[in-house]
Image (cartoon, rainbow, N blue to C red; front, top):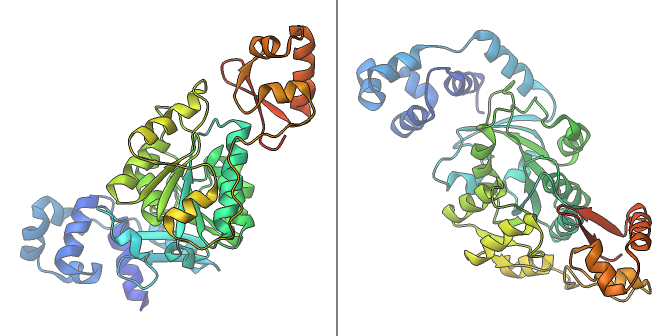
Length: 361
């Protein structure tokens, strides 16, 4: 912000408890800045947002809320980015309902960097998380930031992969920037705040309300050039992000999976609806026309391992009975062997009583 007065006006405007999002947007459209809206005459304000809106604008937020925001913004590496400022990401300004302000902890310049969103199931398979992390690192190594939502499962794996590459990663939160959710990702959030960025449109102190997360999904897709869905059931919130991406004119990519796995069904539906099927990160980089070193590998390329059971499994999820029929071994012997392979990290048990050989195992 240019002056403390501007900052105070923006905080008072965005934190006004009775103003609706629509009223805020209408006021900025009419008066351009919060301080000009506050300086407008009663007649002018009523003409834009009506009598009720005028009364809402006059109802100030609690001074303690303003003071807490000022203290947070004053902390090192904390930023308050508003629409119209040079730091506000151009891609967000293009979406139908851009946020008026963003609380950012970390590298705020990542907001405007070329990026890819990677999302998927919270209850992801081991293979799905490996895929998300590998894709994210390859995308980040190519210079793109990785955007996701700090959730468990695919989101967390994508952030870890993005942080390892040169593009880094940023998390769009469904809470205030001072509230880490879920708590299990607290350490990851601290790493993002240090080497990447945490981003929220919600006022400080906002708890993890269910309605916040579908709303923040439009920012995940809006910040990015495209969205990759790694694993998603048919009712997954990741499909909301994908639909937001389509509405925003972004590319949508999906990794296919086994027809027997519920977490593949959402991705398969996206592909039926026109999402681009991808098998490696290079498929995405080619589509986005991002230069990269070509080292293509398909997701399910499992070579001969020398282990009869692993070779029989291939890359498709199989039940114990399926493996027994394919190998001719007794189910009891296979069960014992599967336990050892799980401990070694070479296979994973997935929903429905199936087992899946992990990539490169």
